Image 1 (cartoon, rainbow, N blue to C red):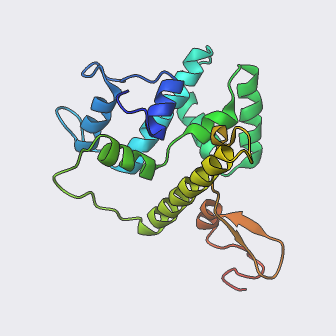
Image 2: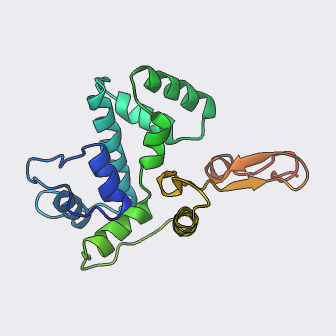
Length: 209
């Protein structure tokens, strides 16, 4: 991996992720080709490509710990690990632990589409001839804001570590989870769960509320 100064390079090195296609011997070159749709590959957007990269992390972790990846298992467990079903996710995390895999760390190491965008355009200095169309601007705005907040927190942690206030602060994983709360009761939901249901609280903020 040619770029080690951003999260993409760090986690690729941590999980020993290499190019997945025989056409490439460098992961950065592969990411660029998939992003632009070069050669025999169809063009991919940031969101699709970040999902592809995160599944590569998952597969590398599985293979390093001799966990099977046959059939739809990898895709199914990726959805469980990144989804909103806490019970299913906790069960999977326990199962991963039995195979020597730190599922919580693996989930935190997965990249967002905006992190990938910065890697391609800033770290690699690449660009597309045509601007990628973005149809889900609402979700995009939230994810960009979350990423920026994480960056600011990481900078603050670095300062705290330098000043001796928090030991090992820069080694901590920082994550942001947007939650919506009902103003009338204790009900709280993640943004993804709210989008899936179509409401925050059925009793007070639902269609008939």
